[in-house]
Image (cartoon, rainbow, N blue to C red):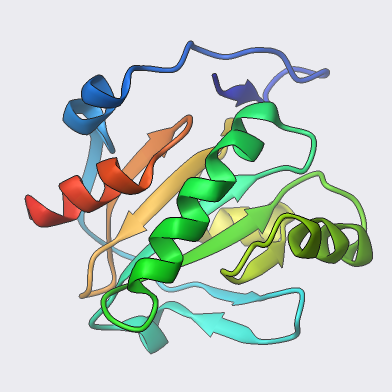
Length: 166
């Protein structure tokens, strides 16, 4: 399930799709050719600029500490990031509505999050795109073009399948 951010109090979004359906529908909204640059500072103080990652796929994932589907997806994103970080793909997590930098850093440590985590706000979100539900993911190709968007959970397998088909 995805959690809606559009209501005053977050509610439930659409139901999750099966893994096989996700493989077919992953990143259904294609944004090919849309180039964008972002500059994000993670909770460790490191700056991440999209141009610095040319030659790699970049998955930007919006999530929250209080969001059950986001928590379910974290192990998949850790596995994806760890398998590819030194080769061809990087995951960046943007924690929305999740409290202080310390709270998010403690949460990331407790959950073994190995990818960069950014404390999200409207400014960081505007650099990437619309975030109506959590989790939401944007995928950039190695040229730095935003090629896909997915509301709801993603898995390592579906992201890898998408990339292999490109």
